[in-house]
Image 1 (cartoon, rainbow, N blue to C red):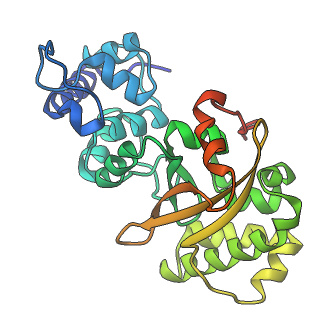
Image 2 (cartoon, rainbow, N blue to C red; image 1 turned 180 degrees about the vertical axis):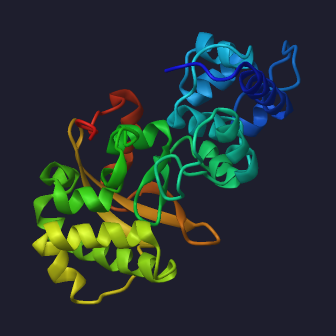
Image 3 (spheres, one colour; image 1 turned 120 degrees about the vertical axis):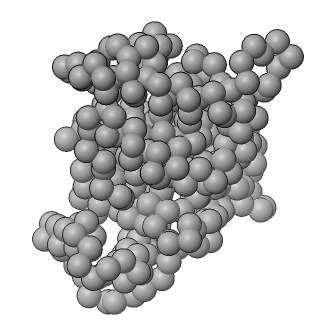
Length: 289
């Protein structure tokens, strides 16, 4: 990637530094420690939170290095708990277009991120109303796989559910029909809550109607129901069948949801969920396109 103008690069570095210095470690779930020499986060801590190398982040703050990708900007905005306006400013300084809301680079409300960061003992993630995963905690990655590699319409799990057979491997075959019906009813509810002219929703629904007979048949039923509290059976490649409760916390506008998974009562799922941290990450992204 080519470099940016030196002035904007310097402004980007100064902005990152200013935002880093205002955050207390406790704000992002890090220990303060008695030997901390700076009031805010250290550079290496921001790099870790954003999934970047320390050298790369140091280059950004120095006003050097290459132009950050849209995914890296989104990760930095989340790591630094930026407001929506600050996030947009960061994109402008980096010379990147502000992403359309609903994509994998969407802004996540800092309060929702804060709550996600405090859910350290249970799998949790933030998704959009179109089931695009925005951010996951480590246990959610271990349970459901890393969802960050999908782009375009494939970023929506609902879209993959009806277009890619491998997307259904996480559910027992006996549950596929009921899951399909629930996904369609939830999508209709989300579409109704959005503006009728919402291009993202209309494009996704139109595409699904054209490529999936199952989706078209269920869509014709006109079922409407947001998914709020679900009991699910998930198939983990290493741990086998795990029965969980999937709970939802909706943002004020309904466009984002914090999901967290708890063991279903009367099953051995509690012990299996405890093993997730030992099993580690599973890769389910497949080829991006």
